[in-house]
Amino acid sequence: MAASSSGNSILLHKLDKCIKLKNMCSIAQHNISMRRIWTSGLKCQFQSQIHTKSVPRMVGVVGLEIHAQINSTSKLFSSSRVKFCAPPNSLVSCFDASLPGTLPVLNRRCVEAAVMTGLSLNCTINRKSLFDRKHYFYADMPAGYQITQQRLPIAVNGYLTYSYLGGRKRNQVVTKSVRIKQIQLEQDSGKSLHDDHRSQTLIDLNRAGVGLMEVVMEADMGCGEEAAAAVRELQLILQTLDTCHGNMAEGQLRVDANVSVHCPGEPLGVRTEVKNINSARYVARAIDYEIQRQMEVLETGGTIINETRAFDSKSGATVPMRDKEGLQDYRFMPEPNLPPLFVYEDVASVPAGVDPTQVVVIDRLKTLLPELPGLKRARLVEEYGLLPEHSFTLVNEAGLMDYFERVVRNTKVEPRKVIGWVIKELMGNLNQKNLMLTQSPISSEALADLLNILESGHISSSAAKAVFQEMWRSPEKSVEQLVSALDLGLVSDLEQLQEICRRVVDAHPEEVQVIRAGNKKVLNKLMGSVQKELKGRADPLRVRTILQEMTS
Image 1 (cartoon, rainbow, N blue to C red):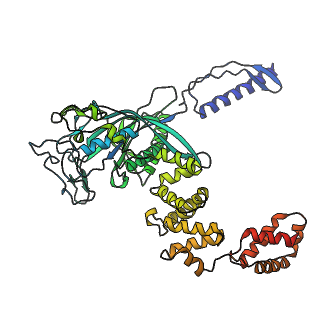
Image 2: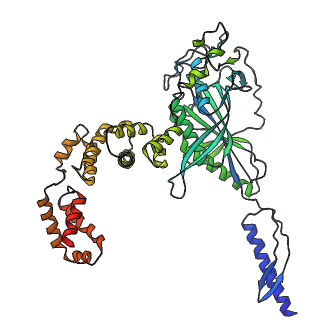
Image 3: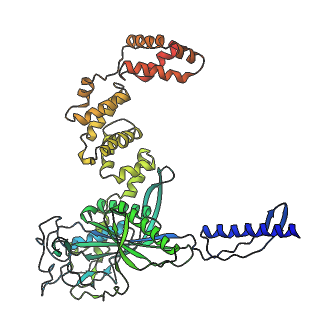
């Protein structure tokens, strides 16, 4: 009986440790069926159900609302010019200031930009769309409402395919897609300039009324990295279409992220909205922080509040702005001063009596669509035999793909060799000096000249890299002039090469014995000594052949 009591005590102790371990692992409402526990040489059978209240493993859910400022010379409903950093309130029409009696006049360029964007995002273009008033009372919106498209937007039901570098070494291209719920046209608001020193707020209405496309993405993303990749891909598409410059630093592309967490298979959690994120990098940081914050709140027994938050880039945290509860009634109503917006499939569908050149025709806009980023990447891989990650880099860096293709056109070097020089040497130097591609002192033609001389055998690869560095310092000189000035031409005199190789072999008797014993790798040390004496001006293949003959 004593032994049995002792065994039961041990079993209960082990069972208690199991319960604590399960609690520490945060596994919620699970049933543990413990069948066989072996201890002290005794075989026992237990059945027990253990219920815990810990929080299960949660995942993030992310949707985006992206406001893209349309690239147009005038505003959405007025003729006021659009210009960044103009003097405050210098680009404000009577309509922008909401003076009585003024009426909106729709800008056709903005409509065409929205249609082209919708086509590029695989959306259905509504042949008829409507404008609505969204009422809210901020000082930067003098009318007290915003003209937008709530009931029937211009484009719906699309998708965006995006890619990013993932995997353990961050060199694998991961491709995903996110559904586009809608694209709607709407007005931008003015700017509120807060003067904390004088405790006052100033209003600049230059931006009020500028045309926006709001791209609403469904909650199909799970982390900041995915959301940032989707934003970057959309930015590339808009820049390729020229429908938006996409400069986030100037507010031309602004991101609102809707973030929540939940357990897979359960309803979505309460979401928070992180407003006005102004860079793709901050998008990733803000979303990842907010996901982690919400998980920690729930794991400690708290509740998530439906609120609007802002991202503080200095601290890397999101901070509350205002509660959303009770502030959702925007009292939407049809815009009485704008008729329905019609777009037409082709010229044949334009009603009689309507000038086809004065309306938006979808087929005409389709012919203007350029090669989009996804197609560019696929073409680079197929046409030039590049790795997917190299095509990713070329397309994502503004102007780099055109630079690469100009080099390829001006040289007979294989594209796979060119890509190494463009990405490693050119971009490496630019990044090191914090320069843009447009600031590079080495043109695509100059790089092609260097590669042609290297391919012809007049200089070695190490000499070519030395010339490349000198090209940064003396961009006005030609490649031929730099090769001559640096005395980097290959030594072609066979007798001279043999003489230097003989001296190196005689100076390394121990290495020669190792080579003759069968270790051919030591030959590389002798080659290095020859190249050092010749300052890299010898053909490696010729040097290796000569050394092999002398050490055989």
